[in-house]
Image (tube, rainbow, N blue to C red; front, side):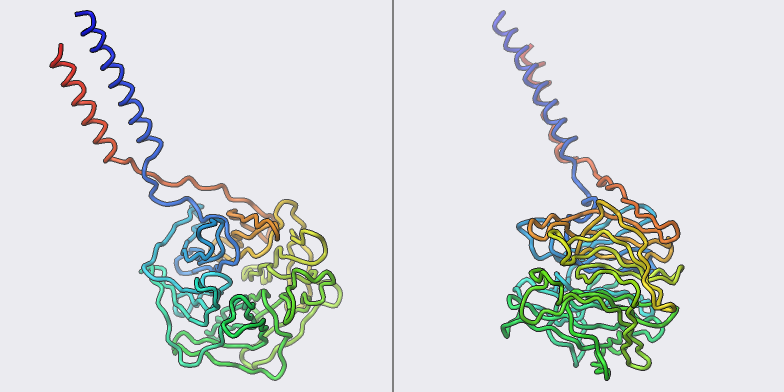
Length: 399
């Protein structure tokens, strides 16, 4: 009789422990509705959708060792500090070093080029529509050559996308060798047409430059990049392949103008980011990689005024240095949003940080990492209740 009582108590304890473990497991492994933010990445594409007030980020080289080619589409809502993974049914196949701009007239994103998962570069044009969450391949007849590392900006006055440069690295060139372009193209989404502009004078061909459209002056402003037809820019200790000149492109006259500030310039660099603050009529440049020291990562913020043809060094922010990040101007909040990049050229220390820059106060602010939304796993909870009920019934029957 005593042994039966001991066995009954042991079963009660065992059932209690099992139920407690399952309850703990349920709480700690609730289904995650969505990751809180994108994983660390660089060489992604990013633009601001002014109609829907969201930042759109596509692709990039992510932190995960098993997923070098990133094909994810994310959106960021500054007002709620919320990242959302969009999971469209299709996506472009140029996931790394592509370019993305927002066509405000058509209320759609235009993406071009980049490296694809076959380790070759792309010359596909894709259109992203935020509301239905769809990527659609365009079908222009005349297309630019395969490329990555190019730069693009949307000219809102002329309603065209301007693209310059880029190239092909040997590993991603099906024809072999390294190519650097200095061609200028314009894309009209309404007619799905690329036009090779062939201006009389062009800047030196380059990869990893940055452009931003100055809507007040109706000019596309370009700075930096590297011209490296025979060796990597990151191995050049003299910086001779790094570009320091500032150029402005006028689509209406199809002319490039060298508007380099003779008094002050950012150091020659690649992997920086630029965005135009329309409220303040200022082109903002941040970060990038130079040849000036071992790490080469920069933490400088600069402003370019096309009217004065002048660069102004705004600040140096310790701890914010990085390269190959992206920036976009949120016109509703009057802030520049920065995401990603890396801080070590050899170790590939990828960043998943979101920063905002307020030009009015000249301050950078790191946004807190949002908490991922969760929902209870009702399947496991139902299993726990069932096990508990069966255990109680068995114990009662044996009393």
